[in-house]
Structure formats: C-alpha cells, structure tokens
Image (cartoon, rainbow, N blue to C red; front, side):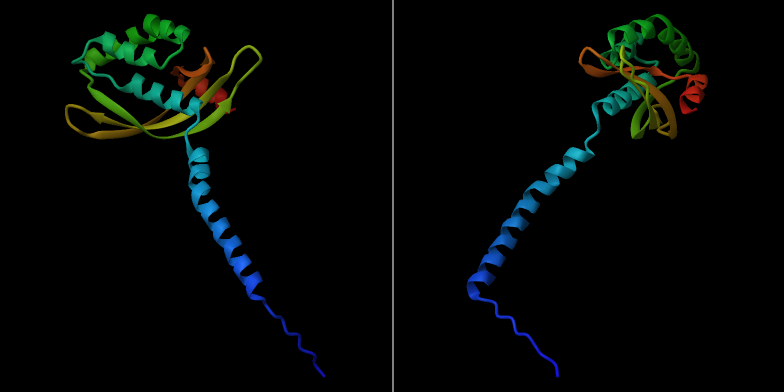
Length: 172
C-alpha cells in the first residue's frame, strides 16, 4: 500500500516566489558585470610593469634620445629615472644609434613572478610579454622581459628591466 502526498501551491506563494526570483535576477544582472570588471582590472603594480617595459623598449633613432628618456621617466620613480638616465640610457641608446633601431612595443600579457617587499620598501618582479613592431619593415617580433617595479611616493612605479642573472636569482 503506497501513500501519495499531494502538495498544493497557493497563488499568493507562487506570485511571491516569482517576484523574489525577478528581484534576484535583476540584482545579479546589475552587479555581476561590475564585480567581474573589478576583479579583472590590472593591478597598479602590473600597470607600472607594463608601461615601463613598453616605454623602455620602444625606441626610435629618428627621435631625440631625450624623448625616449622622458617616456621612461614618466612611469619611473625619481631614483629609477636618475639611474636610468645616468647608466642604462647611455648604453642602450648607443645600440639604438648603431643599429638604427625604430621599434614600438605593446604588451600582450603579464604575470607576477615575485613579491619581494620588505619593511623598508615594496618591490615586485613581473614577467611582461610584448610584441615589438619594427617601424621600418612593419615586422613584429614577440618576446618577454622581467621588470622590477617599486612602490614609491604612494604609487607603483617602473624601476628597471632585469638582467638575466637577476632573473635567475628571482626564480630560485
């Protein structure tokens, strides 16, 4: 002998359930894209790494060296800009002039490799992937660089491109 149970849904409960469903659907439709956008936005340190790599590697022998230095220093900390102008710029620009380099680089991706923050300073190392277009031939080459960024003056700023030995130490 089996007993069957019968459920009765009252119209007022059905209407209430539908209204609750509609309210939840509208709220999800309204806020989910904003929440997703917030989580998918690049972090300030990532932006500093990307902008720094793009500025450092985008060189054009047809423009004055000071134009390139200015673009790098705009995204760098004050100390990093001074080091860049006094050491790296001289070395790199000599190669730009010798090889008549004219390229524009655009980042295609980035990934945090290491957070090396300490009490006295906050620093991160990012791997930045770039496509660099040769402005003479329109050929594009892809590559990646490791970038150091530092928290300075209440903002993340580009510090420099790392040398291979530094990359190996960072990955250990």
